[in-house]
Image 1 (spheres, one colour):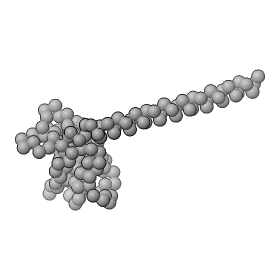
Image 2 (image 1 turned 60 degrees about the vertical axis):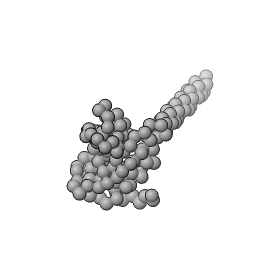
Image 3 (image 1 turned 135 degrees about the vertical axis):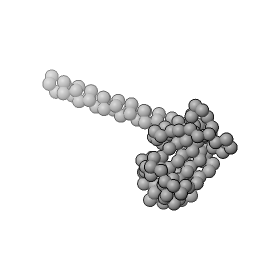
Image 4 (image 1 turned 180 degrees about the vertical axis):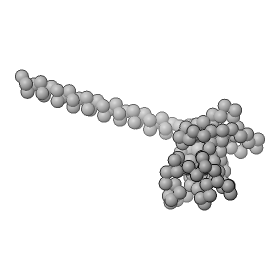
Length: 146
């Protein structure tokens, strides 16, 4: 009788463990599919300008490469002589700031502002500050083949 109870409890625990793994795997797969949907359908419609304000040569080009891998349409990249402390996403074309909010959420950046671009070159700009490693860890030393 005691062996049956122990066996039942063990089988129950094994079942719960398998169920937990199945639910977690399903959730993880959903997140990957959802991210891939954004890469394919939403990100390409957002024209981004990358501006390096860190003083680190070549950083804008590396970030451009990574954003393009994520499906964003990076139309321009450049560097400034001055440096800024915080990375900022700047909306250029929409008063609802939808483009900048999407890019900021994608990167995990909380600094979002608006500055109109009347030439309509880009929908939003990513201005890289000295805290860029928070959003692109190790990128300053990474070797990226273009």
